[in-house]
Image (cartoon, rainbow, N blue to C red; front, side, top):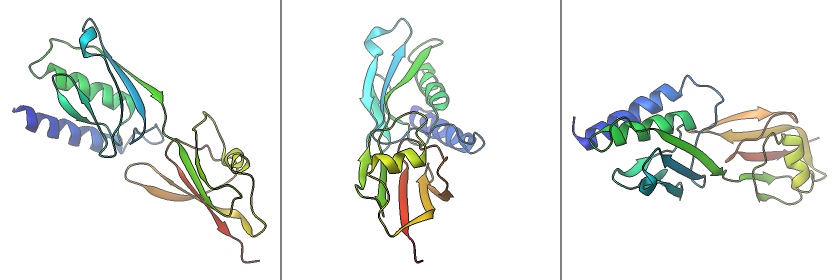
Length: 172
């Protein structure tokens, strides 16, 4: 199978298999990753995932990572290196810095905020200065993932990197 066709096949297989994983974190633009290839120090790569969802790596070129879990990204890179470059490659894949989350709507300081592990929606609202007087106490919407889905959240919902939080107005 040609290199380009193999990459496309791997990407499609990994993305389709991702649908069954559930809530495991998906990589996206703005995440900074580091990839180590066992006994191949010159292939070590540290990069930020581009807006196109890719990073560039030695030998294998552009690698699509958007929407993949860390486990899927590791497997995809190992498969690409195994396609004529390395015998039995062993890759370590680390997310060095997660992309920020965003909050807008009826909060005092809307904007982007650095991701913190186990941050709840209630804590994200506190980081943004709290709710404005006309803010809804229950209509909080989160946009998440690849493909992007939206859902109504409560104060205990855990925020993920790249989440877009919208705090609606209350009409009463």
